[in-house]
Amino acid sequence: MPVAQGVLAEVFGGQRRRVIAGAVLAAAHQAGEAAVPVLIGWTIDRAVRGPALTGLAQGLALLAVVFLVLSLSFRFGLQSSEKAAFLAAHDLRLRMTRRVLGRYGSPARRTGELVSVAADDTQRAADLNIVIPRAFSSLVALAAGAVALLRISVLLGVVILVATPVLLGLVHLLGKPLERRSHHQQEQAARASGVAVDLITGVRVLKGIGAEEHAAERFADTSRASRDAAVRAARAQAWLEGAMLTATGLLLAVIAVVGGRLAATGQISIGDLVAAVGLAQFLVWPLSSLAWAGGQVAAARASAARVQAVVFSSGTSDEVATPAAAGPGTGHLVLTGVEHGTLRGVSLTVPAGQITAIVAPDPADASALLDCLASEAVPDGGTITLGGTSLATLDPGAVRVHVRVSAHEADLFTGTIASNIRAAAASEDAVRTAISAAQADSVAAALPEGFDTEITERGMSLSGGQRQRIALARALATEAPVLVLHEPVTAVDSLTEAAIASALPAARAGRATVLVTTSPALLETAAQVVYLRDGQVAGLGSHEHLLGADDGYRAAVLA
Image 1 (cartoon, rainbow, N blue to C red):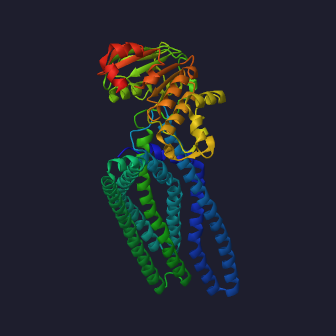
Image 2 (cartoon, one colour; image 1 turned 30 degrees about the horizontal axis):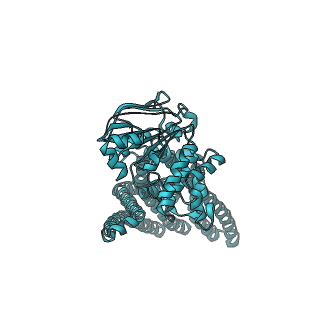
Image 3 (tube, rainbow, N blue to C red; image 1 turned 120 degrees about the vertical axis):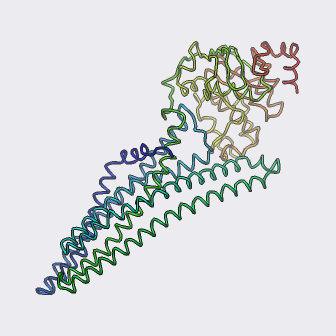
């Protein structure tokens, strides 16, 4: 299990003042609770020995003050610790967001798993800030109860002082299996969430290939595994709480029996007996709280380990890259002997201000090339330079400011069409130009509220062609020095494809554009076309030249 102390230290350290304030106030509340049975016993003895009304009035007045103090302490102590927990959880979620969106990209986990960690594990880990004040106040309550019982009888005090470390050891012993099972429970729950997101996202594909039954069985298996893990964790929690409840019950019985015998022999007064029994009943709560705290700490450690595995996976920093860290501003991109995946020594030049097309019939070649250009992978061999500077020496986030890659399956986000296009737009003029070039205005015209139409998650309320045009408009609106478009018109009709091809050169005038495509209409706009075959450059020239010179190229683009 990954070491979780770093996350837990951050949870406490970031909210130290609130946690300490909550612990002090919670301790004041418990000290007041411990004082109640003592004051009741004192009041009974005063009423027996002297004027009953005077003793009763004094005792009630003191009890009223104690109840006021303990009530206010409970209210503000709980408020402070709860706030510390929620703020710490918020900080952890922001840390995770910076990690996922940062320079090293998203960890290799399903979306559902990341959501589970961000929603559940961060809060479980942050709940440590509630556990600390409660555990501290429980120890204070035990100390106050022991002192009060020692005042009444040394024997009663010794019983508490001996029983407390034994019970704490029991909590620690039973908390170990709970921690392991809590970690496994959260892992299985996250896996079930990830599978659910995958199936929901691909429901159309599943229906298309008739795999609904297989998908349902897969989710049922995952869900059962999550259920079984939750049952095992609950069983461990039940053993812990049950054992502690039994132990505290036995302790209460011992104190009551010993106190009764001492009162019967005249060694303590009636008031002291009432106080001793009241303290014994009171001590059940702090002892039970320690058992609860043990379980919560085990769960917090397990969740913190999962958070840490995301935050510190595959990288050493979670900072979000900013344009301030950017490299060269030119769009002149050069690949020299690049080897990655299926690519074998690919060399090509993307001149600034021109459209360069790349035809890669093998999807693996296209995928490997796009990973390198998007700074999602470091080439195994060769170099990629931007304006004469190697991308390997630049921050990946800074590279993405200058080299924007729009994937073929580009996701849209929940919101309006306009907000999607403006997500990273350079200016309003750029937005208007992009909308026109991508033929996105015809998409808006077909929708009830135009560009203000709300779309669902990932744009699934739109057709494939509509999604492609909105994604293309969003990419064009960035006005990036180098823009890489992967098959941006595969889902549109031929007339729209021709219109986009006609408008693209003007929309990208003065900036470098890379089209990874087999669309003849787009290929005709390119100043040069690079043909990849078997991971190598097999041809270079204009679209017309390659059509006549290479049978493989002709088959790839005219099939």
